[in-house]
Length: 263
Image 1 (tube, rainbow, N blue to C red):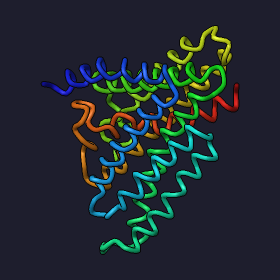
Image 2 (cartoon, helix red, strand yellow):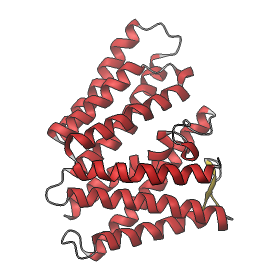
Image 3 (cartoon, helix red, strand yellow):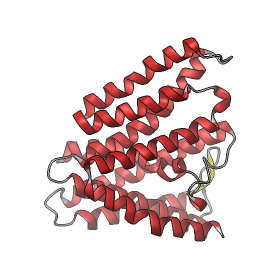
Image 4 (cartoon, rainbow, N blue to C red):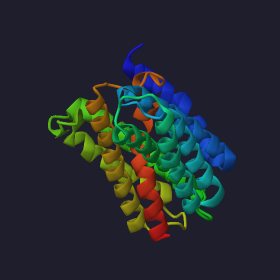
């Protein structure tokens, strides 16, 4: 099976499930976020195993951060995340590792901050009064449209490298197409919805596109540093879970604060 066909199959099966769980919200969304976080963290820690991350501390901190986001909002989410630091320090004290504490604990905390706080902001966005469901649907559709347009246009028309030192496959043509698609989707998703105005919806679309591109390049930089191509093979042509949600991890954070600022 080709990568393109597997990408299509995973999308056809996965997108409706994700959208349905987002529609339900509450603990259903928490469960989805927790599953994605643990799988993505596992992939990251496997890639970075030579750095000896303190895996239990990362898992526990991620779940605590997501649980805080679900139960108490941003403050509780940060409080849950901070348990990663304590657990990482305690585990390092009893672990048999030759890596310096700076390397081991930094790898552990980076993974939790990047993945759990990114998905935690998606949970927070879903809880925005009155328009949370619409906001999350919009962000997910915008990220999907951005990724798809950037991938297709980049493959067909891409000539100018966006960041060759980080990700040789990314092109300026794909970036422009993805950004345009993101703005268009945000505009139509929020048109006459009594939520954000037309200019505000354009700002949201552009912000999500820029943040998503940064998230994609961030993961590419990590993978290049760790000398791996994909984070895993769980999702066929999409690669691993982390490959699929890398854009969303940055985009959800940016979208949450844009929505809070504008609504």
